[in-house]
Structures are given as structure tokens and as C-alpha cells.
Length: 200
Image (cartoon, rainbow, N blue to C red; front, side, top):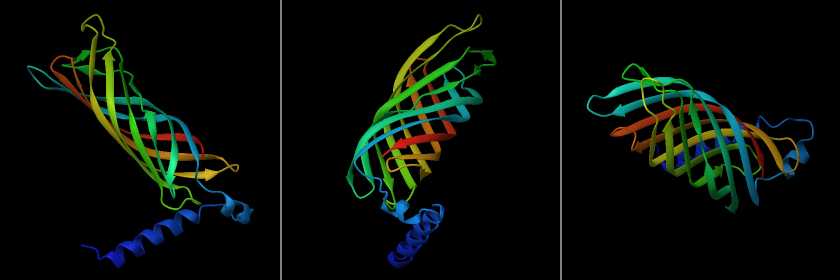
């Protein structure tokens, strides 16, 4: 177990490494830029979804998915953003019980926090609690289904300032959902990598 001093040292090193990615040219301008005030983020990317249909017989599924993000909020403390967002994903070709399910669409919406460890740098951690809704498109072999439930999102990323308020970044994210109404229930989890644009 790390002591408070060791933890503080590790955090300091992490922030220092993150700041090292800021371009050297225009360093003074970069240092003047801060993540504060109004926050708006859009993102898109891809990942891999793992699903499990819980019914008379559990049926797993997996496959690539398209992930996106739209979030807005306000900075309530140094580097700390609170707001609301939506974190959809589309699983392109799921099958359960070995049967084509068409496509699978899930969207989770709810409150989030996003914390920039140093407001002048780009390293950030985010999480959200979500109300979720989704459906299976269905196919000739399987009827369409609609479900609702809950979920959560955890992510870590790095943003690089392109202008005083705009930054471009990469975000590694995991979303997990549990939906009821699709047979008995369905569980979905998806690690994804997104490209993000943030006004902040």
C-alpha cells in the first residue's frame, strides 16, 4: 500500500509527463491556456463489444462497434467539470444463440464528471452514471426488441490545445450497460478508442 507521500509523487510525475506532450514552440501561450468555464465535447471512434443475453439459456455475443460521445458541462473547481452527456454505441452485427440479431443500438445518458489533473495540461479522467435504452433491429430469424436499464462509463484521455478554447484529443473509454426487456435481460460492455474535439 502506497503512503500519501508516494501517492503524491506518482501523481506529480504523471502530470509532468502529460505536460511534456505540450509542443515546445509557443510554450508561453500554451501555459496561459487553461481548462475552465464552459465545456463541450464531441467524439467518435470504434471499439469491441461484449454482450450476454440472459434468458432460458445464456447466450454470449461479441463484435466491433461504433462509439460516440456528446457532453456539456461547467467547470466547478480547478480542472473539475460536472455536466450531462450521452454515450451511444452501435454493434454492427451481433448474434445471440447463434442467430443474427440485425444491429444493436444502445445509448446511455446521464451526469458525468471530467477531471483534468492539471488545468493547464491535457491529461483527464472521466466517469458517468447512465440511464440506458437500446434495441435490437431484429432479422428474419429473430424479432426486434427494445430494452431500458442503466449503465456507467469510465474513461481516460489526453487533449492538446489547438487554440485558446479548442483542443483535440484521444479518449480510451469503457461503457457497460444492463438492459431489461430484451428477452430476460442483456448485459453489454465495450472498450473503445475515440477521437475528441473539446471546447473548454
